[in-house]
Image (tube, rainbow, N blue to C red):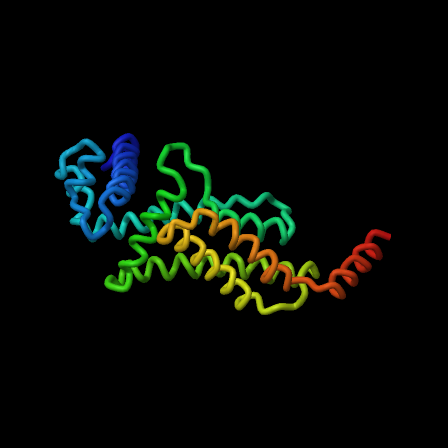
Length: 219
């Protein structure tokens, strides 16, 4: 039977391997990555890595799950947050990322993420992970928009279609920054989302009627 201490040690080792994989992928890219490169970042022999993973493909599959967990678990929405606040928070987190304590920050991690994303066309398992992650991002944005519609904050729009556009724009902004070196792309796209997409959630007539309804409820 595995003791709690042994389980914690195994978890710590796996997390250390995942972080070493981040650094190795950032240096070498997926195509040229060797298990030896990860071992050098971890300063351990490849034997320890092979003890936990059956090879490069198994390790990278686990690594993708690790990336997804980092980002999906990082959107903290305060209880009682209104739909606008939650929508802004989710979009900003997808575009600008959570804060990381180490020097290997959000964009270094996104560089690795998109390197693997570009390879997903050749690997069904990896494609499934990315597709599921993409759908969860889109779905979370759509859910907020639906809540806003139900609460009378947003006008009656197609939540799924609107969320699809927002999610696609987020992905394009990341690609422009990472692949083309356009560092201001995320800020440009954030402004575009506000001006051309989120503005469609309300119009002048709807905003006026919402204000009147709020005043009546206050009375």
